[in-house]
Image (cartoon, rainbow, N blue to C red; front, side, top):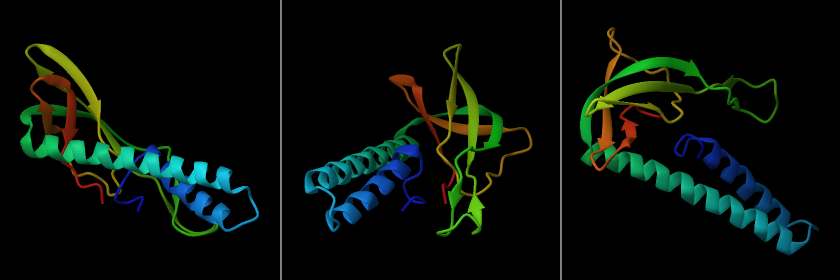
Length: 143
């Protein structure tokens, strides 16, 4: 599920949900397990809403040309197996800037699980809310 809902909130939500489920069937106190489980579910709902909001912005938002400032691998490390010897990945993140009505804004992408392909001039479409130009999103595949 981390590939569908990316970001620290989604990852924390998944871990808390898993721990809560495990603790529900263990000798741990049930109220504690339920609090952990519900906290994880809440984080997953927030991450899902954030992803949905960005998708709506890309579909219905106003498009301006932005400039990709950096493309960096995130410090987040995701192990693909159960041990530290298994392969792991570090997702990418794009930081960008764009100008609306003479005011420069900055933003950053979601965690991208594949290396993003940028044009040579690094100009990218940025989708924003015309009422709140500081709210923006990029249309790069996260998977």
